Image (cartoon, rainbow over all chains, first blue to last red; front, side, top):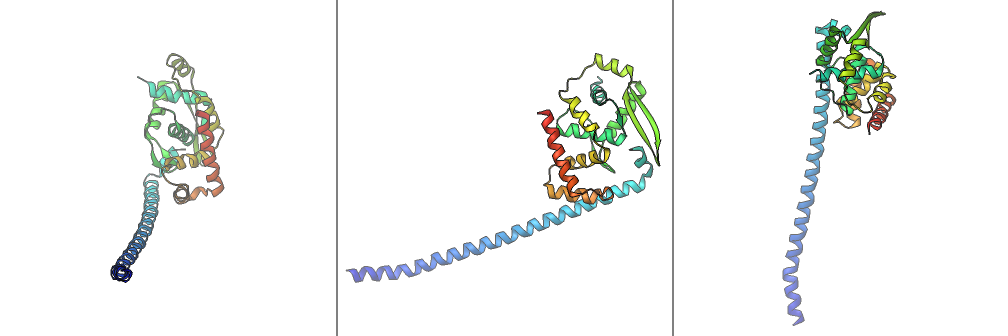
Length: 75
Length: 167
């Protein structure tokens, strides 16, 4: 009786353990990928912010060069 | 009808005299951003937030004889001083605008120099950004003013002081 039960446990237990382990590994890998994507997104956002700031600086410089008298008017 | 003009006049009255167009622009912008109901629209310009509507309103008040503008030569540029005229004071007494804490708020700002107010108003213009990003904006857009990290910290503290005045 005990030998029978052990055989059943061994027969089904090993594949189930393998399935669970594989699932956990896949999940961890996905989480790592997500984290990588999030970091990339943050990097792009920061680059975009720097480009926007530079664009704004250039636009102000352009206005300044096109309307030199305005600068004095604003004092 | 002249409610927005009256608000501006009230701000000048409680300040006594405002020296410099830039200073006047920054004071109104800061007050608007923190809590006072000024309606002028601002956009980012050479010296930070600037309102063409405010410039026109000041011109109108001068033309109506409510505001006294003195233009004086100062080194390589002209500086403008603004005070209310007697007619302006009379107009205000008939058209009083209720803006609590306005006097202490504007007196404090009037004691600051225009360069510092330019920094404060620039920080407020980018108040949707975190402090580090605001600092980058200041160093990039206002590189000629050579603001330091310490001045930026001081400006943030000053904003908190001003907020405390209206609570």
